[in-house]
Amino acid sequence: MKQLFITGYGKIEDNLQFYEVDMPKVGSNEALIKINAAGVNPIDYKIINGLLKQINKLSFPTPIGFDVSGTVVEKGEGVTNLEIGDEIYSRVPTDQPGTFAEYLSVDCSVVAKKPTNLTFEEASGIPLVGLTTIQGFALAEIKKGDQVLIHAGSGGIGTFAIQYAKSKGAFVYTTTSTKNVSWVKELGADVVIDYKKENYLDLVKDIDIVLDTLGKNYTKEAFRVIKKGGKVITLIGDLDNETAKDLGLNSFIRFLLSLKRMKIDSLKKKKSAFYRFVIIEPNASQLNEITSLIERKMLKPIIDKIFNFDDAIDALQYLKQGRAKGKVIIKMR
Image 1: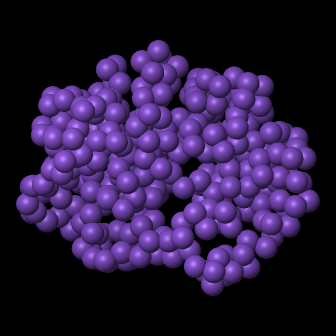
Image 2: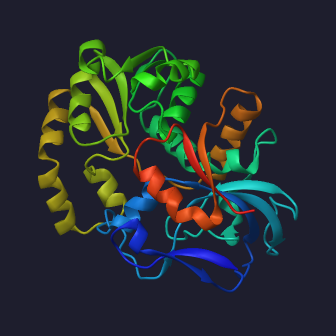
């Protein structure tokens, strides 16, 4: 079968290659998935660029891709939640990537049946952004009436997070560019801030939660807009000590991270704030929650562009440009 591999750290165009490999073997608790589509995510090109080496150093060549939708074609003897022919979707474990392929063997515990009202392409763009959103807002204990800022409302995370926060009864602020204001409003955001014309810092004050999807200065600025005791959930900012411990990083690495994080820790203390970096975990039960919301038409996928499998490298380069409105998808068949 055909599969895309990372061959080294560096530029996307120089460090990806297709290989012909053997079909995956199926373990007792695994299902063999005939892949129809795979979602592309920023973590994919960040891994190639070597930005996550401190957390997980790779041996090359190594598979790429975490989001998948497809059909179960074989299953192990211990699999009870899936049947041959089931149409599924999943976010595979971080240490078992490989969804940019024709087939994939994956543990049944991270696989859920895809929403019946979605195509394979639509479903493949949901797992990572959906689970990141749910787990991030779970850390923040989001509740009805909370005021939430979600940066980059037109991106893959933003388009899902706006809808999910609204399903929880939150009041949502978001930022986007002029050309995207109208359709981001249609996703349900209460206040859409055109960052090319307005400074969000002038408009957002004393809110409960910031979902930081941009990092850098935006992470620090989050503490300016939250209320005393507010919560900052980051997907890209500095790693907090609790998460570093959970990842099993040694004390020296944690010390270096604490030096890098000094400004954040100071801002956190001044606001008596909660700050946490989200490390996504595969979770089939949370995917089932997402399926329910989608089938009840409380959430909908937003797809920017679909690439054929042969053009998967182009898909990664396109996503890295940062202009996608919604998800970028690779179609296998």
